[in-house]
Length: 400
Image (tube, rainbow, N blue to C red):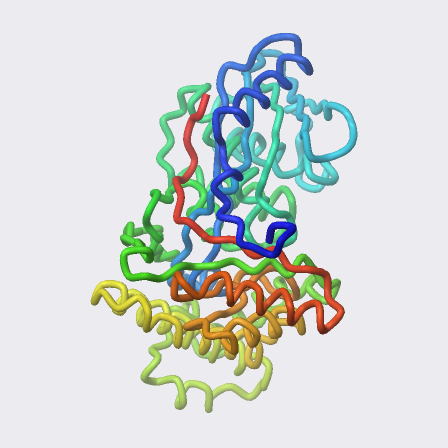
């Protein structure tokens, strides 16, 4: 939201010329020379398909204009130097030969993990000087960490001539977060940041990383997509992602399938009857039905009926709230206020327990819906949410 309560488009949050020039000049001031290049990688919002990616399922994210920007140069002496405009403190200096999972604290673990993952995979990355800046909101469920990982992976791939494909970069970035940082995320966030195309959503099969760029021109249908960042993150979310992943894996073992991707939606009632653990049963029901919701949204987009996606979003939120139980009062209020003000549909997006909701609206209703969410939060005594338009944007690329 702007100070007057209006929408922000996000158009100024990306990697414009001023941002690129600023990051390059800051790099020169830090390291005494201009960078070899500047790269950008976006955050993402997920339209539908939550907690399905680590179950080999389907997801439908789109990249945001908000990006992590990295100015980078190679080093040949085995030293990795990291600096962030957004984090207090000086340059972090690391010996690349000494990089080990869990050994690097704080924000620096994410870029350090990328270099570690590349070296673990046999790529001859000897070191780098890195300066980072990001406009992806942190803690908002918009994949600020994936943007940080992917931007450095893309930079090192080009600088060292590794010739990796975008899915390869996404997998390496995911490995950095899983094995080096210790967060058991799926691969959706990194794939969206690495592979997205402007004006499109990314339909991704996380089992084999096959994907399809889906035209997503809501404006042509008189529609718009909003993101309502609640600007809260509840401590309840700590460890909850890993617990739900473990519960899904337990459900797959109990059902004798590789992953929950292999449970057909038409057999769900019978399948649930075979599970004795009520919590696992709820998790299984969410994953199987959310995979089906992704298929439903794809069918509606292919049929030229994006307005009908709204009802699928509402059903998805109910499943996340009631079966997976990863919502929170602020997210529930954002969804209820948006739908109550005339939105076609809304749901929480991301890991939950705070973060953001995604809202589908008629374009001429966007301001009214955004204002209704703001007023509802004020009435409840919550911090003012940030509401902005989600414009499908480009994935990782060199920008300077």
